[in-house]
Length: 433
Image (cartoon, rainbow, N blue to C red; front, side):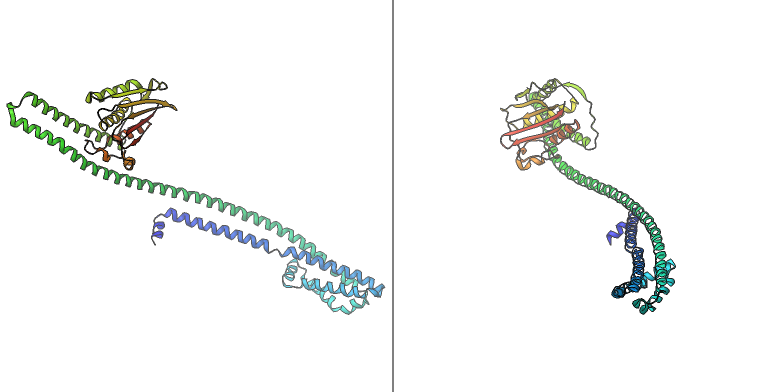
């Protein structure tokens, strides 16, 4: 019942299906009618039956002439007479009699046949010369009927060929229309399936986004709570102490407040960047830039915040001097990857940026010797707001890697990684040169 309601709700689909069914029924009817016409061809047998009767009459006439001369032809005479009777009896049967009637010879041939039946004794005794005239009349009448049957058969064959040709053209036209309607129905079905798939993907994306932002709100509320608590406690201490607090103590607490404010600012900026990516509002400006210079800028920016760390840069001989890309987005990706590598690796271990080139693509490997990522969690690493269990106790909301992957796609590249828990991670950025 629900299927019929769905069909009736789409008049175009219903009309197409009805036309489709009607054309199939029409094509089947025309094929069946053509097959019946080919099977029902009485004229093909009638010409043979009339000709055989004519030949039997002529042979009886010849045998009769011989019997009148030599008595030993009596047995052959009986055979020829019986053959003629069987041929005439065949012509007197229902379909053959109607066919002769249509040709206009039924009455004349029937009358002559009756005379042949009546003169059986004379035929068998070969005693009457007038039998030759009767047989000649019968043979002549049968010959004329055979000629007319042949002409009628030709006419009927021509008409049948025309009807068959017309039927074949109609069937071909019906099949062409059926194929066109089938293609149209298939196209509409594909459009409907595509629309349904898009709707399902949109719904799934909306559900994932809703779940991600629910997690984000919970995570951000937690991340905000700690910096705000530090800021509030520092300000309360300064207010309570007043002039009794030393300048060094005030400077230390002010720096602590600034660090927490910076963390909040970075968090909000990463969130805004992620939202811009989701709605496609990130614009790129492709320019020629030096690969070595961009890597050095990213290195210095990270060392400013962590001067005690070591970041190595290794550039292969095959790497070209320049690349056409958006330097701001490139710096954001490399900065996120370097910050993660420095955060999740021991201070004594260096972080390496290794540049190579192949197949007209630049490859940047950011390698660390840190905690690594558990294998069962690796497939979730690029999801927004996901944080691996190995990141417990480290500040962050899990947006950096997701943002970096999306920015790599915006630049026409790809971001992948390889990691072993306890041995470190290598993130690989590939960009078209």
